[in-house]
Structure formats: structure tokens, C-alpha cells
Image (cartoon, rainbow, N blue to C red; front, side):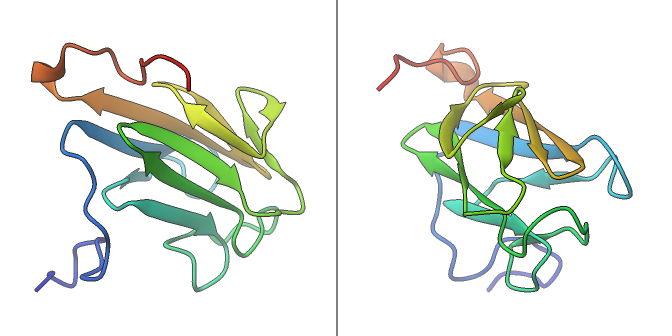
Length: 129
């Protein structure tokens, strides 16, 4: 059973132990919030059905999904009104690298990716698919 304070839902799919990622909010009311990406996918939005609910008028109810593709992490816009920008470029779906900046409306988020120490890979590095 998952403790109530744990953001992981009991029905969530497990993710690889070789990659650990965290979303950091860098602007606005939620500045300083850190959210571990510890499930197969996380929906960010202002709607109550989002996994990470951010009550910000400039983001959609289900704005973007961040998920794992093997040992890589990606962001996918979910048809939001204002779009999802990765390092200043509007993207529908994009693999993320360590320290990438995500903009959703007025929100500025940053991705922190840590690889397993034993893997020998740098955060977010891997041959492009």
C-alpha cells in the first residue's frame, strides 16, 4: 500500500531505476516546487485530473505529459492552448536533456535528470532515435 503522502499512486507503472528525474518550478506562485517524476508518465495541468495540478490560468487543464521512453524522458504537448516550449522552441513532443527549460504559459520549469552512478552515462545522453 502507498502512504497517502507519497505522490505515487498505487496503480502507477514502475519506471527504470537507472534514470531519476525531477521537475523544478522556477517562476510564479509555485517557484521552488520540486516534483519527482517517479511514474511512467505525469500529466501537468490546472485541471483536477492532472497528476501535477498547478492552478495557473495560462496553462490548460491537461497541458503536457512528461514520460519515460526507455531510459530517456520526453515531454508531449496535449493540445494546449498556449503550447509547450522546450528551451524556447514550441514542441509537440521532444526528448529532454538535463537542465532543459520548459515553458507552459507563464510557468517556467526545469528538468533535472540523474543517471544511475553505475551506468557510466551522462544525464539525458544517448544516441538519438
